[in-house]
Length: 421
Image 1: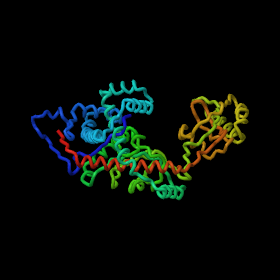
Image 2: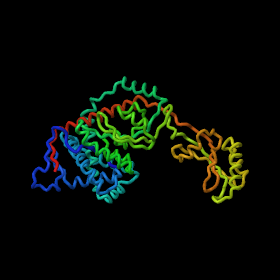
Image 3: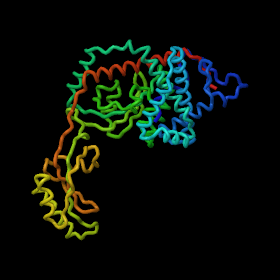
């Protein structure tokens, strides 16, 4: 539910000043960390831990809290650095912007703001904890846009190259992919965050929603969309990631994939081969026909209905003819045609439709009501569409801007004075 925050390693990069247990007279439970003389209190940390748990879907168990506590603290350190940079640049967030952001979160979650507040209250989270994260995210996005937006240029040759590659690979497998990116600053940093990244994978494989975890932890530009990057060919993914995806099955979540920029966690939601059209978006007009049969019907009755179903299938040629044909059989009935999208149908129904011509009927399916068939009144395959040049331009721009933002945050970490208590 919450916007993306950042997830970094257990230790700071070179250049930061670390003082473990500095000032033994200070209550270590009251101060979690000091970031350039600004205090992160233990209460702030506890609130953020609870927010992460309720918004990412990670079960709130003592073991899970202990595992993510350090990660959340380091995310808060990054957030404080972002806030400080926004203040240095005189960037602020208005209440109107906060209200609009909360409304978007409510719409995305199919909840009202009041329901969100109740949801947070039940998880022991104050509304101010969510607002602090949202405010920091809005301010940081503005920092990155203000500082680097004018420096990003996407050349026409880059757009041409993307289009050329997509045309060449039109008949190659495509994957509907979601991603989580956990970046690192160097080899030592990578080793330190590897275990935490693997724990995220384990949590999602145990049931934590990938989308929610991506919103909370991913550092990619896709985090705001729950990690969704749409349909891609393996060659469009970062080096090393495409080869892993090509060997994954639908529904799988990868182990962390180490690249030059960070660890990727990939979920393959669907795959297809062809010109790029998504078969799950095929449109059907379907009429259901029924030959009633009780669940405990004797074998003779079952055989009779099977013969009747095959006879009906051999004769039906359209939805106009289907009602009259099915009524020839005892208690045979039909329902009005309905418009559906393939993705709305059960897998076994989609499989039954495969290869059936318009006007024909599917193989019989035995249900509690009897023997059921679907007559295809119309079928409109989804059309594969190449992205426009403008869409490619926007995508490349966002990727480059996101990379510059990650580099800027890395520089802020390097120059920071941070004390962990």
